[in-house]
Image (tube, rainbow, N blue to C red; front, side):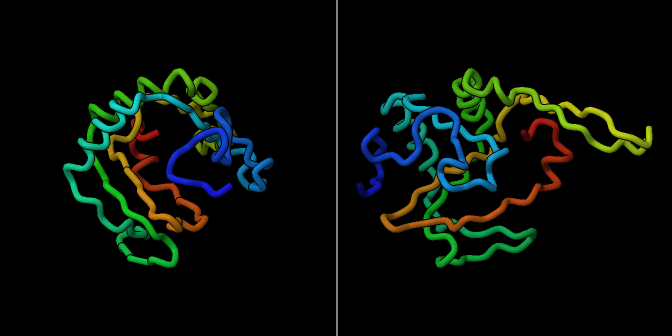
Length: 161
């Protein structure tokens, strides 16, 4: 069945809940975390959120690489609005947070030069990034598989997770 712009149990490729990347043929992402949450917002609420974002025009979604920006339609073919809103990001986070308990706090073992050994570093989710992206793709539009490098912003801003 052809995937359309709407999501229903008959047309969707990924069911609600945690995404099982290996089962979807993406074993390289087995240790990654993504979830699908259905019906988080009503249609009227979504329409209001989109109307707020659409006060800005849709622009062709470009590729950012460090300090350079490129338009590459054979790599990314779609439109984007970048909408900065602390208020909206807080509202979205409040709605999503109950679904994120598995990753609310993450521990990792890191090398600590002060002790010349490893130590546990904890990351705690405190808010969403206020720079929200709204994406829209035409029929046949795409964004090819890619890796997003860690940005210096994330390592220097404890609120960016």
